[in-house]
Structure formats: C-alpha cells, structure tokens
Length: 77
Image (cartoon, rainbow, N blue to C red; front, side, top):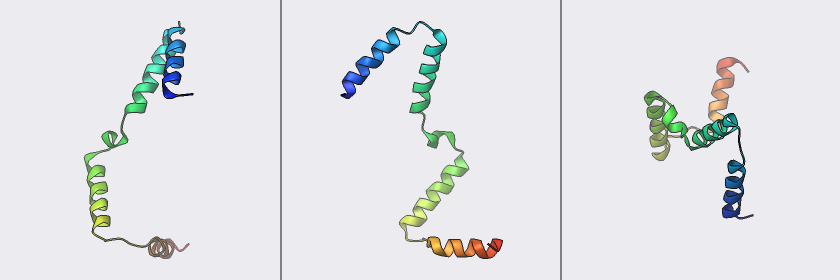
C-alpha cells in the first residue's frame, strides 16, 4: 500500500469517527509525534550534548573498554 493510499484510508477512518474522545486522543497522538526531544531538554543538557559532540569531533574520545575498566574499579565490580 502506498503512502497516499494509507492517507486516504486514514481520512476515511477519521471521517467515520463519532466519538469526540477518540478524535481528541488521535489529535494528541499526532501532535506528540511531531515534538522533538531536543526541545524538551534543559539548556544545561543541550550544552553538555553539544560539548560532547565537539569533543568527539576533535578526537577527544575514550575507548569503551577504558571507561568500563574505570567503572569496574571504582565500584569494585
């Protein structure tokens, strides 16, 4: 089924809905699917992510095995 056919099917389903609650729930679902997690996080979280990206881009990386060894040592795992 093509995307256009799916859209037409969805329109037909919506037109047949007589329950306001179902329509309201559908509208909320569609709006929620368009929200971006980036807009929901704090400025501090965004800054930390951007700093990490800059560090990775400049080659300031730590191997996963090194991080795991440090954590295991710290927490005696």
